[in-house]
Length: 249
Ligand SMILES: Nc1ncnc2c1ncn2[C@@H]1O[C@H](COP(=O)(O)OP(=O)(O)O)[C@@H](O)[C@H]1O
Ligand SMILES: CC(C)(COP(=O)(O)O)[C@@H](O)C(=O)NCCC(=O)O
Ligand SMILES: [K+]
Image 1 (cartoon, helix red, strand yellow):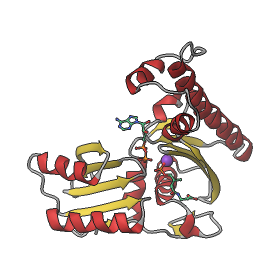
Image 2: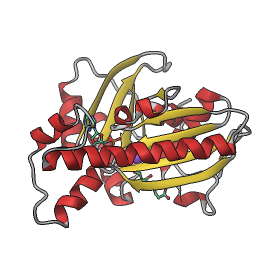
Image 3: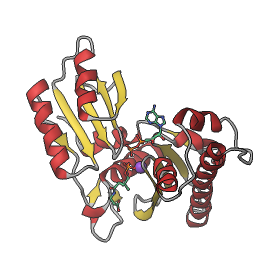
Image 4: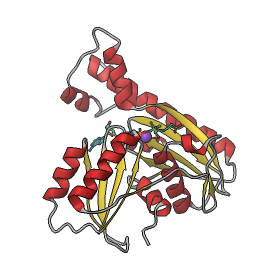
């Protein structure tokens, strides 16, 4: 079995696949290393022989996780590294090492699945949009705060924006003008995300008149899905790219 990890700024997405990559056996989302090891310990008949991961966390945090994986599972995790090119896909950053590895893998995964120009939007702690041309040139992208950051900044920098988490979840049942603080903030922030995605779509239409695929991924992809009716929502997009960047021969 292969254990795959996508370590974002807020959550670790993990999954276990068969060695030939054909079957997805287990999967989960956890908010800490400790919770990851608890989930793995509770998994029935887990026999991990290989591990690969991508992390946008600090090198120290990533090294600590790799060490714990070695201790508890006896595997040496292969970590995705920055590259200026993988196959025909070229990294478009001035310094390719500065492009977030999750973005790079999502770009690789999207181009692999789409085989033509792509717009890739990843909605997590931060929201990122990346453009890839039909020939595989990554043209760069945009970064803005994601839903958790927008909502936290509002409560941190105001005195009276306060409401509880349960109320927040209920507020997103619809997007009518809010009639409570929770509704006004939650819906306002979701409309920011939706407006961002709509703008990226316009940019892709102008940049790729010959047509393009839109890929949405990340924990909040569902909140913007209907802004782009033809979009493919691929929760595992980073893992698709991880398998390409880190083949386990
Ligand atoms: N089941 C879930 N578990 C955790 N976060 C979720 C879930 N469903 C939606 N979300 C949303 O997804 C966001 C995290 O997305 P994710 O792509 O995991 O972020 P990151 O990669 O930055 O850690 C959360 O802030 C939350 O708004
Ligand atoms: C933009 C990000 C913070 C997104 O992280 P996430 O929301 O997935 O946790 C991450 O890709 C990152 O740290 N990037 C480095 C900066 C850059 O891509 O230019
Ligand atoms: K993201």
